[in-house]
Image (cartoon, rainbow, N blue to C red):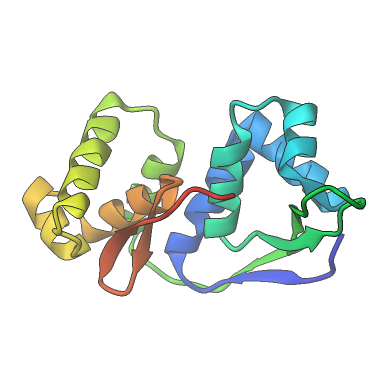
Amino acid sequence: MTGHNRIVNDPLEIVPLIITFNNSQYKKVYDLLAKQWMTQEELCDEVGTECVDDCLAILQKGNLIEEQWRMPKPGNTPAKEYRTTYSRFRAGFQCSMEDLGDLLYVANSTDEDLREMVEKIEADVSAGITSYNDLARKYQVSPMLVKGLAKRMPHLDVKGQGLVILGRPE
């Protein structure tokens, strides 16, 4: 395990942390990576294949893991291996209770209405409407809720004043 501190200065950065530690399979992946470098294949062997792709995407988006190439045996191809980046946490941010409530709701919710909103937002981003302020006005929610949804989804992220669609991890 590394001795680095995760310093969170933006409340939006807590969403990947909450998602990781609120899901038993994601937490197991994180705990395994805290002990040693592991490839995606090794993680799938330990926890099953259904969650590892999304978990690695959330961990990468939250900057919670680092990666490197594992040197293969002769004749095999190299594989990426991962481990956690931080062993301690420190928060140093201030936000409104409304924004904090939105982020906690997004990170912990299983609300079907949020799922429908995410699908609509994904369609909008694909169509070129990327400003989270424009999307917030369109769906009559706070910009923090829109940014939180982007942080929650493995294939969306916040870049500058907008949302972007990310590629899948290799």
